[in-house]
Length: 461
Image (cartoon, rainbow, N blue to C red):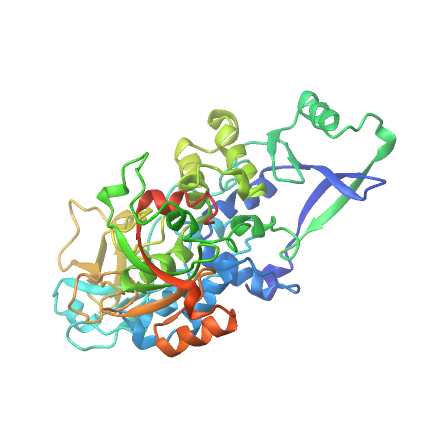
């Protein structure tokens, strides 16, 4: 985030408990509510990265291990060079909207566009466009940076409405991120629940909320990640669980070989292929709101679950800009081109791409624009349709790529999601570090699908 953005502040009036020196509640308008609600659109990988950069870095369990594993893995292990960059620089599908916030914590750069101008100038259509640098087109040409001409999508902020929240309403926000429209009833119900019966215990304060102060306790996102990821499946044996719900899109079953400590049935590590590693790496791309949705707003998510439920309960007609904005917050999509395999467990929809076009003016100036800037029924002479290159494809002409990680390959995945290329030497060394004798280990085959990932004792995320 640029230094001038870090200096932005939002004013907030809070009521503080005098004896405990704790915030009881805050009164907030649309500007602060927009900031809070925007957290639901941010990918988990971005949250890990942002918390590392704060003056007092916060480590959030296994998600941090997963992010570090991507950092440490050699680029040659990925489908394409850009895959590692994609996972370490996860994008928000609603980044354009979030950049309109009074205070935006996500420092991810706006999406840039790169075009194969030699082919486009010859009016050769096809996959010529990329949103990532360091790619070449199928003709071998280096892609050229282009400015996309596009009209606003209707999420503009006007004088009264915010990005997600509309009107001049004021809201009551508790310390654990429960949000309700401000009213006498809501205020005194909260005070009664907290056992506060006398106003003398309370003191009003005004706060300046800045980049360092604004975030909720993201550690609640992964409060249980240090517990066993594989334990639920192992404890129930080697059979696939009887699914209460159908797997998404008849999702693929992923097979692992787990090394288990016989004395306590704890998984020490798993031997996994590129399909499983691609899947767990892709968790970094999941927007926070979608994770809460996938976990059925589980109480283990703490204040983040409270925030999600608050959005769900808000009246759209009175407090949110539209039903689309509510859906956006409760079921945020993956950023464009960030989806893993469509048949992987926990498939989350990807943002819908625009249609892109290229045109050269009569005086030789080149333009790149989307359908919002063009009359599709009358595009004009010399307009060329250009499609996006698949960033995960190892070759420019390839249209499909399976996941982020190249295969066939095997990896060692520890129970706290440290991922390394598989090596017998590493496995033996790891067992030695944990002081696990060889006589106390056994191998079990684990099959993971949608249900196992969603509900491993509801402790995965």
